[in-house]
Length: 129
Image 1 (cartoon, rainbow, N blue to C red):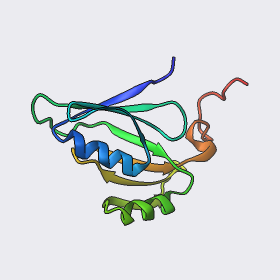
Image 2 (cartoon, rainbow, N blue to C red):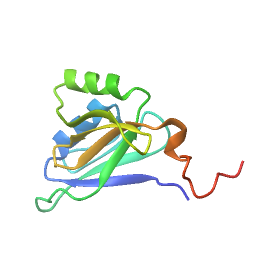
Image 3 (tube, rainbow, N blue to C red):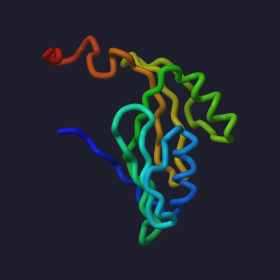
Image 4 (cartoon, helix red, strand yellow):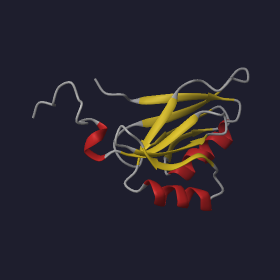
């Protein structure tokens, strides 16, 4: 089984798509202002944005995007006018991460974990080769 996509329901679909394009996702389906689908630049995952029938409250889902250099990515996004709610920092779970909010108030985490993403020292079982 593989995760295909996540969908954000938004009262601001155009602004939400523009936000994720700034993060580097590529628009692959454009039916705005009702629907759009974006593809991550690395891997096969996609994100869709669907207009909400009523103004949704921000949910408790956090989207995590891994990047090789969190600090450089934060600097790039700041140059595009995005604001961060947490500066890049090293966490005790061995990830470097920073947070910002999308136009709907959803939390977005930019992180780098390397080998610790799926195989931290405290992993229950090691992956089978």
